[in-house]
Image (cartoon, rainbow, N blue to C red; front, side, top):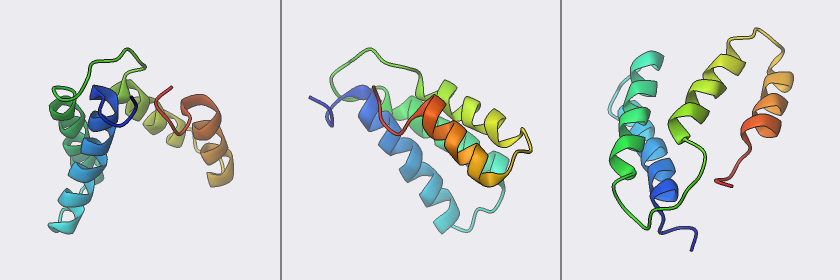
Length: 88
């Protein structure tokens, strides 16, 4: 199972929370990130429990990669290669 797991639901909850924040007129990046992290925490309570990398730590690492000041293409590549685009 992949979609009915705590990690999958938590990841989807992070995105849904961030999009909802912005759609509701929110425009503060730091606040949006905190809303996304709250979404992760809420979503982790649902689905079958599986072991995997922390979504919150992945978000925090992505933020650190963005703050490096590298060119956007390099940052995107680093995020893809280090964090990945899935839950495994």
